[in-house]
Image (cartoon, rainbow, N blue to C red; front, side, top):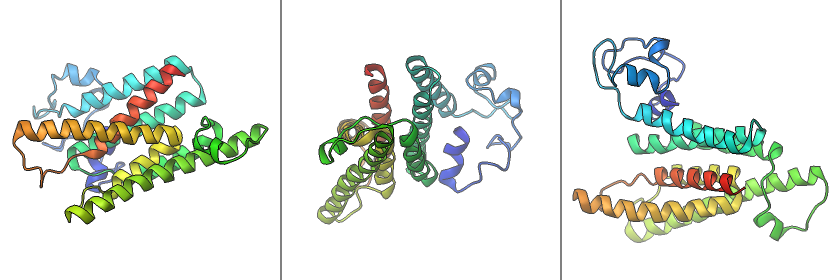
Length: 250
């Protein structure tokens, strides 16, 4: 996952070259690539040149591992757990990509949306807005159809709301306030969480982004008119919180 976070925003291949130190370019051996353990044993430094390994590496490994453990612990070794683990990995990748480069790679947003639509066939979403718009259908096949519709509507409507908000902001302030990456991220979240989950993600992410962003700008003295808030990171974190909370409640 760390390879994707570093390379995709920079338009680099995740296949070649093999994992290497970005300071000395030496290939990293498998025993120096064990999640968390290798970082601890190496003291957070490259074995070859002693360059500091970014703290992002163990943070990504820890956060992803904890999310995986939570979903498997509560859902068991089931397709539902697999679905949520994939979702968590996508979100962690997006959170840190946006923090580092202010980029939300299409491989994670659009690729994730496709994965979410596929999962909606095998792991049905609970009814939300679709149940209000359409009459109840009976049978297992109808459950899957409703789930696919829920995923599609959950992707489209919140994404449309966010896109319109960004368009209005640009119209009023004469500068871009949101990138299309944020719109794609909320659409991806909708395919996994459904309409209700995506809507709560949008609300929670917006509140957190506003409060924390304002506090950060005040504390650092940055110019609010030029500072680029990593809004996708807040949306990703909100989606992860909602997924974990729903997992605990469900």
